[in-house]
Structure formats: C-alpha cells, structure tokens
Image 1 (spheres, rainbow, N blue to C red):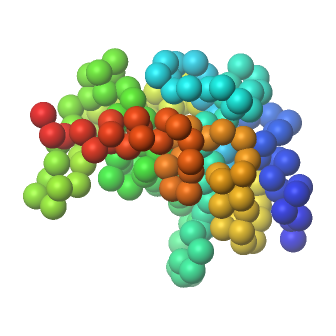
Image 2 (tube, one colour):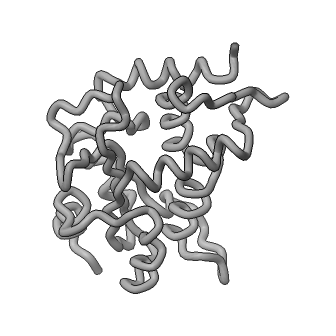
Amino acid sequence: MQTDACATHQILEPNVLLKPADVLAHINEHGISHGLYGWWFDHALLDVPRDGCLEFDNMDLLYVGIAPPKDRPIKTGAATPIKRRLWRNHLRGSVRSSTLRLSLAALLKDRLGFDLHRDARGRVRMAKEHEEILSAWLQDHAGISVVHHDTPWQLEEALVRNGPPLPLNLSMSGHPFNSTLSALRRSLGRD
C-alpha cells in the first residue's frame, strides 16, 4: 500500500504532469484503481487567485479530488473508480456530474460563450456542444497528477484543509476565493 506521505508527495510534487488525453493510459499502465488526483492549470483561468499555489511546469495546482469517495460501493466489472471519475465525470462528463466542470463553466462562461440553464429540478445544464468545448479547453489548459492510494479519503481532507491553497476546491476549503466561486456557480442558468 502506498504510504500517505508518498502519495501526497506524488500529487503535490509530480515528476511529470499528464495531459488529459494521456491519463487513462497512465492509470492502466500503473494499475491505479483508487487514489488521488490533482488538477493543474495554466494561466488561462484569469480570475483564479494563485497566491501560494504550487507551481510545476508553468501550471498551478488548483484542485484535488479522490476516487472513490468514502463508503461508495465498487461495482464489479465496472471501470476502476479513479478511471471512471476522471474520464466519465471530469474529462468527458457534464457540469451536472462534476463539481470541477461546473466551477470551470462558471469561470469560463463569458469568455467561451457557454449557455447554461436549469432543468425542472433546478440542476444546472449545458448544451452538449458547450460540454465538448469545455472538454477541449481542458485538453489545452490542464495537466493531471494521479497516484494510487487504497483509502484516498483519508488524505483528501488534510490536503484541502491544511495543504497548499486549492482555490477550486469548495468542500472542506477555507480558501478566500470560495465565496466568489460559490456565487458564480449559484448564478449559472438564472439569467
């Protein structure tokens, strides 16, 4: 089992950042089923404060996540939790299935011309072609660090609460950007 310190080190100080298009091959090659991942972004996110954020390869670590969440059953025969989370939710998912995508849509809405609306249940939705634009934007402006850990939820809270600034993490975060990002997200689809 990966030690907590070693796993944290690999997320915060990676040897290389993976391009989103390469992350699934890396997960398969290294047998990563459960774990932590860090999202690193270039300076295309203009409104996100980066003071104190970790920097590597001209990108800043702005968000960390885990898969699976604590107490989530694992479906036999399904893709591994981390592969499913990164691919189906963050890389190719929708703003409804990924808090990271929703935050990015809120930040990039005006610049990329996203049209968001709320469904009958009040959930934010974005047209498929706009989801594809967001997915392409991620390919061009993001890097990912990922590491296997059998119980990633044991590390996530400590990283978000006590680690480097992570301005795109909302849950458990006391980052000053939290209120601005939350307000942007709440305003989506309410035009």
